[in-house]
Image (cartoon, rainbow, N blue to C red; front, side, top):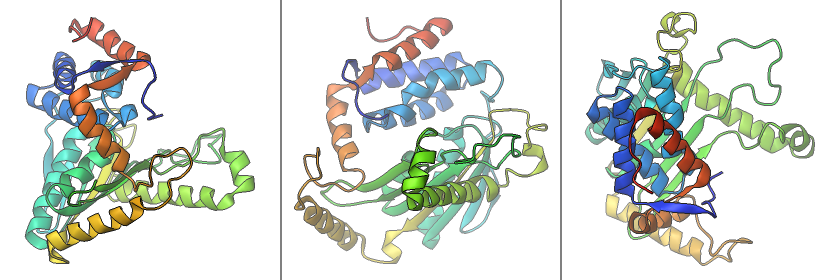
Length: 326
């Protein structure tokens, strides 16, 4: 899904941020919220995770226009202590609540060594890596998952994966080398692949299902989304059924930060000496390719494939917002 398109136009990151903010503002979001979400989406595009960047805007905006998400949420911490916090998203898009939860986790980690927060009552929050990278920039190890509770088992449940594909991310800062950032979905297979692969390789199936389950339990359940007010019949904003769990660990409480980063660099340099896997230029740990794309595309522009471009043009046309390309 996140292989760069072969046919595309390149759009400067700043132009895409401006377009995104204008679209969200036209959908009724306050300008600061529109700009925060847009910055996170374009940051995701720059890393080549195009499935979870500005390509999602059309669907998000329609959720606002159709009344399934709150365009003017009051995002706030409803419980705080020295190490933990709970952030309520008030039915808004998940990026706002998760970013606030990440900030609170980081501030607690810097103060006490560890910060663990949950967000709840919000919409989809995009890729989990945005929030672990926030922790990484403050010399913390970051961990993040997002998910929801089961809303009731349907009469004909999906046998292979009834809990969806929640995201999971870890981030570790480095020195001169690319930081190690694992940013993935926890379900490894598509719906049409499960039956065949289960018979041939049951171990990956069970490991994937286990990751899916714990991601949902750490976020949706630990976040309290099973409370009566968040059940489908009682929710004011029907697309706000997600929660998130974010953990920040202050590296300096365990090892000197510069020594940690030096060891990260040494490890990565050793990894790069291994023979590359088939079809790869060199052996990389997670995050290396995205790091290279982020630096290159910041200069060259972000490649928008035809479907991505048309999706933005469609919603821009509906809202009367000009796109920054011909």
